[in-house]
Image 1 (cartoon, rainbow, N blue to C red):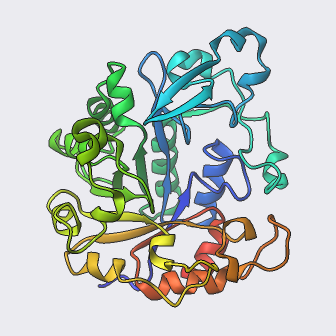
Image 2: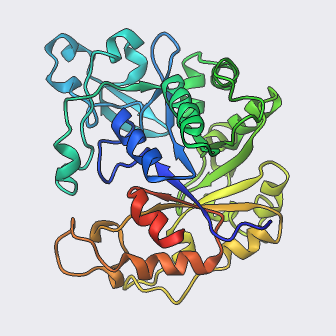
Length: 338
């Protein structure tokens, strides 16, 4: 039977209500009935797959307040950007497990910030086990959309990223297609490497609205295609090429909304239709209700944390015919897209 609605994916759990990537965030998303959850994966010094939005953890944990780790503060270049902070690869998992998570956007989400300091970080294995248990408890298949972060960067440090991911999935019994698995990344190279290792799942390539994929920049320099070129139906590196590499794409919602300079949209762009014509599934990120994240024409009032006319923005995305949406507020996402 054809699916009548897009997958509703809990983006890092339910971060509209709980600090992202915490146990309570995932528990809430699963209890609310999401089709899948999305853990972002980086690595510790001892090779543990850790669930954090970025490898820099100064803004999402209490590490900056821990005097024993003050000397670990570093400035590094990650995917061409200079970043100062504390990085997962400079800590063992045992050390990371002593930290406590914090809300990344406390001014926008003070309710979520009220849970600061109560929960440690998670490993990928923790999330995989949690979703499997929820699937059994609820009597339904729940998926995992695993995002591999900064694969080229970690590879430059000596990590075998694809092998580490594949091994973890197999040990957790997520590598053979028993439960719905999507593997995604902003770097197509690591997706191909994981697939070559025999992990069964759906492989989805993430596309930014601007910039270039860092794996191709590292390999091809100035000749690397832009994300916009890869999203094109006519470019040599565009959708036809992607259709030979991956099963789907996941795009910044602005690539669908195609706003003008005043933040208005005339309706969905052709990117979803163009991708579907080539057999690619299309996800989009991230559907959020707060004014801070909406196009200007859908904002209501000046309070960035207040909810705007998110339903009108989401309707444009729904009209495009996407196959999956990432949401921070699973109840709102399910209520609208469900």
